[in-house]
Every structure is written in structure tokens, then in C-alpha cells.
Length: 113
Image 1: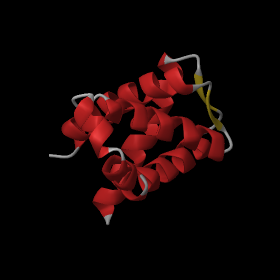
Image 2 (image 1 turned 90 degrees about the vertical axis):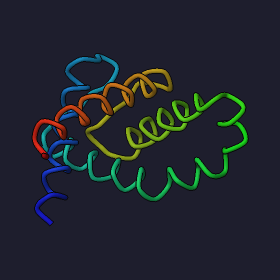
Image 3 (image 1 turned 60 degrees about the vertical axis):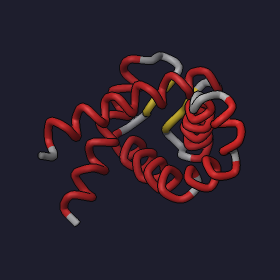
Image 4 (image 1 turned 135 degrees about the vertical axis):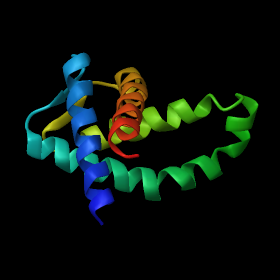
């Protein structure tokens, strides 16, 4: 249970870092970052696998690059659902998702051994 809370906090910090690095992504408060991290985690756990399965032929055809499209769309969608967390469009969603993944991976590698 403690590990889940630490991962949630890592994701919230990673979202705040993405907002700091990208002017097209904004987080208004720490509470908004926590809420967005929670919703993003739920979307990645529940919706993303279904979308990956449904788009498997396109993903195979593009040699896996379509996963970036799915991640960007989900990141952008969470930005439209969670108040206080805003993503300006599709391409900022794609680049924000990539940066978010890299930062959260690095923080988890440092903090969770």
C-alpha cells in the first residue's frame, strides 16, 4: 500500500515537472497534480490496455509508433477532464506524455529500489 502512495506522489511530481518544462502543459496546484496523477494512473491501468488491443493492427503496421499516439491522446484527455491540469493540444499531449514517462521512470528508479 505504501508503494502505491509513493508511486502516486512520484507521478504527481513528474506532472509538475512536465508543467515546468513545457509551457503548453499547466498544473495550477499541488492538489491538481495529485488528482491528475490519480486519474492518469487509472486511465493507464483501465483504458489504455483496451485501446492498445483495439488498435493492435495499426500498432503492428507502424512498428509500435502508434503507442505514442495513444499515450498522447490519453494525456490530452486527462487534461480536459481534471480541473487545474491543462494540455494545450494533441502534440503537447504526445510530448508531455513522453517527458512524463521519462521523469516518472527516472524518479521511480532512484526512489524505489
